[in-house]
Image (cartoon, rainbow over all chains, first blue to last red):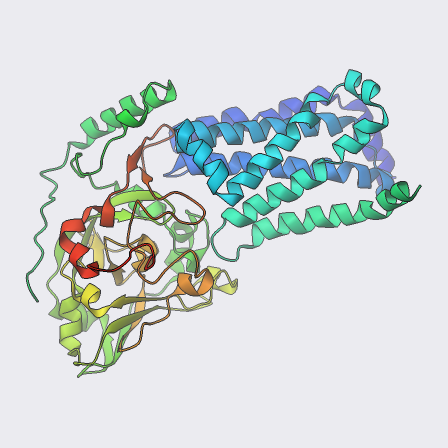
Amino acid sequence: MLIDGINSVARKVPTWAVYIVYLIPVPVLLYQGMTGGLGREPINALERELGEIALQLLVIGLCISPLRKFAGVNVIKFRRAIGLLAFTYVVLHLLVWAVLDIQSLERVWADIIKRPYITIGMAAFVMMIPLAVTSNNRSVRALGAAWRKLHLLTYPVAILAAVHFIWLSKGFQLEPLVYLTVILGLLALRVPALLRKVAV
Amino acid sequence: MAYRWKNTLTRADATPYEEYVNRRQLMGGAIGLGLVGAAGMARAEDEALVPNSWDDITQYNNFYEFGTGKGDPAKNAHMLTTEPWTVVIDGMVDAPGDYSMAQIMETMTIEERIYRLRCVEAWSMVVPWNGFELADLLNLAGVQGGAKYVAFETALRKDEMPGTRYPVIDWPYVEGLRLDEAMHPLTIMATGIYGKPIPNQNGAPMRLVVPWKYGFKSIKSIVRITLTDQEPPTAWNKALGHEYGFYSNVNPNVDHPRWSQATERVVGGGLFAGRQDTLMFNGYEDEVASLYEGMDLRENF
């Protein structure tokens, strides 16, 4: 009953609503950053908020397939929006880091090659580019079966993003580890199906 | 003691606050437009030092005993009971024992020291501390001849410090200095900020301030001071030895393994704050470089 209810609501909600709702934090965060709402050091706070929203969206995106398979909840029509929003937040996270935080191309480049946690963060971003570029109907049709394989990249992207978060934290902190555990759990749910496909 | 340190930075030297803020905003705007490159970076030593605002100093803190978020200490530190407070001074001293905070405050002469504070995370502040030289306190207890190091310990109270319920690091927080660093006239015990009693989130009732070292060396809410002839363990070194050495002197030429230490951002500059170059020994090179003569600072990071 509950699941039918969710599915019928999901059918009625247009996907653009997801874009609207999930883009609200951008002006809100910017406004807070300018007016002291993000604390005494808004640049790091903004960087962190944007990165965390991106990571949350990645996790939500990874939940969509298992939700249908194991709970019968069908929200698959929102998956593209969730993925593109995740990419948008990663781009914003990267821009705040490069422009407001590091403030020099030379140092940005130095950090990317010298700092492993930044290297893997960048790697995750680069891997998201083909996913964002192919998030349209034409690409789905053109790529056929390859599209599905390509979009499995979401798993390594999410894992790298979580490791990036763990790595930049000082000491043993719980929150980033929770993200990695959830992502690995979601991956584990799909392993049997993936193995079957490989075997065939 | 060779000499007592004279504070050369006073509030009279400082740029008026409004003017300073305007300047920063101008710079920030320019950076936002991409007009300012390396040439636009202010060098800390060229700029008159302006103490950060009370809110900057008391709302942006690292005090993991109260949580790992920068705002957590301001939120949670009120739970800490700081009165009464006793500091144990023991080890290689003539008069080991319990020293009550009241007794210490009665004996010591409080003065103001406006110091730069550089966090290992590449942000910085300027803080107008009130306190006394650590040397005076150590002399009160009487340092014995064989002592070579001073070990410090922060209070550990699980019911008053919510952050200590998680093993973020191995509690209690411990720190250490070489005896000559501890006796240096720049090294103080702070008991106040801006002439007010030091807030709990800043390390009440008494915290160390070693301005030429990264902030985490300046241990807060101290309950034990031990004179010893062995290099004492330090909290961050125990947690991540390859990242945090015993010395942890501010050094723009030796990067943290995960980030550059060449520049820093002054807290409180807003969304478009610029970065400034980090100074050797945080700008106290003339005063302290001699302590490390002949030492490889890359090796002894």
